[in-house]
Image 1 (cartoon, one colour):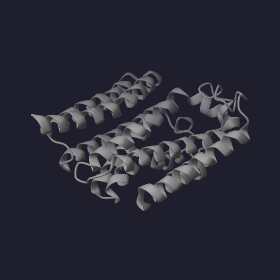
Image 2 (image 1 turned 135 degrees about the vertical axis):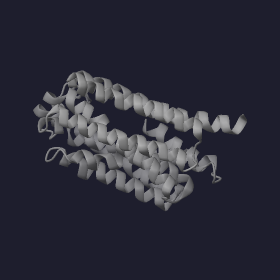
Image 3 (image 1 turned 60 degrees about the horizontal axis):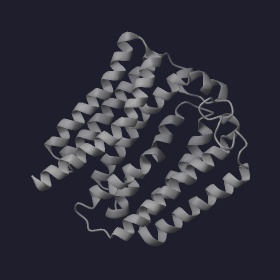
Image 4 (image 1 turned 120 degrees about the vertical axis):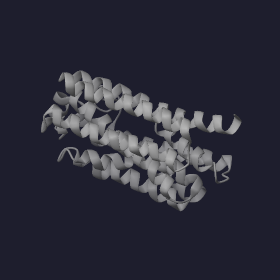
Length: 273
């Protein structure tokens, strides 16, 4: 998913800026390494708490299929390679974003998860970075369009992870993770999900108003945005929060590819028809 949104950022930036295929390929490799490093180091730090959660207990470290030091060294090498490629073969802007993403995810977000539920908002920053890194790899700058793309991914993550927190509430409690579902009633979490989903939809519509895409995209993004929000509203109405969490999680996974497809369809139709 990170590579898909990163590539979409590159493609949108390359509409107005000429970029070499080699530079784009190297940027994608660096993005892959950066994300893989963040995940590897995150799993190293959370290897003990992962043992207490059903969805993570079979990962290589908690299941003791892999030595923790191997994961630490592996993640460190991947992160170093990523930053070297970004610095020497892409550009300084994307290099700085890569550092911010890696440090924020591993050294800030991961430990804060065990101290405060508000770590969710901090984790959304590195989580939204791939699309911006893809965009800056071509544009070499953070402009309004890059900020809009970043905003879509940032706001998308809040309902995505809140839905997991509702479904996996007991697992988070056992692992010591301070999820919102342990402190707030489901109806208040649902309100938060609706608010951020609306922000997500508004950000997605700004892609059209910023002339990145046209009317076809605006129609399609509106439909899938409302489709996403309706699942939350329906769950609140029925007071069936756990089922709602499962539905919203599934729709959140589908939402991003549909949004990217909407932009692609609009661009193709505008170009050839």
